[in-house]
Image 1 (cartoon, rainbow, N blue to C red):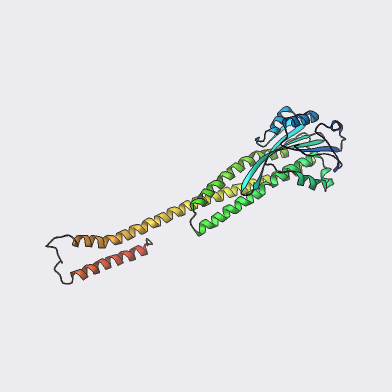
Image 2 (cartoon, rainbow, N blue to C red):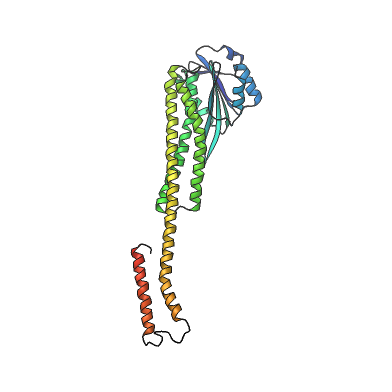
Length: 322
């Protein structure tokens, strides 16, 4: 059974459990509301709850699809929201979605994929009935805030990884595996931004538009929610800039290292060219060559070779080629 929790609340306190086709839900008192949580429900379960609460067919279809982007739609006097979820599972990001139906005296959530359970959130709200007394629109804010709060550990983990890589780059050259990790992190950031972008649009609509089932008293909560989203966006932008800087700096340092190696090789090649050239000339088998019969010619040639090589070495050393 995919029904995780389904209860009727009266003045912020749990009154009794309800079913998907509970006929009493058609006559809920003004100060009461129903909160139903579903996880990967079947088509028949969605059909039952749609019939009992008058949910729009298109919204129900979207709720059953776990690959929808975040969005906000209005169907008559009901509000339908899809919120993409993301949280860390080990060293990778797990994505899911939560569809939310907000209507007269009810809120229904449908979780798909790796979306986290709302059990802890529900328990927290139930021990603070003054919050639940605010009604379904406050529960909507609490659920969305719960989803957005799941983004922060992802940002912190990626930021920590990137900063460690930046320090590693300043201390030594990045390995091939570390460069590959840079591209992996960049790809994860791009995917995460694609999740966050539509969520920001949902947050702006909740703050700026006049929507059914949301009164002005709930606006401050949604402004706070939007502020959290903007903080996540700002952090992602900063991390992306650092990541680009790390890659570019690593590439520049690698070019400098290769240039230094090339200069060293060229300097040693020039130094070795002197004895090679002199030895090659005097190694030719000719009878009439200058200095061949000189008593001190051998030592003179060695001295010339040593002097030229030492002179070149000093010159290259001063030029920072060696």
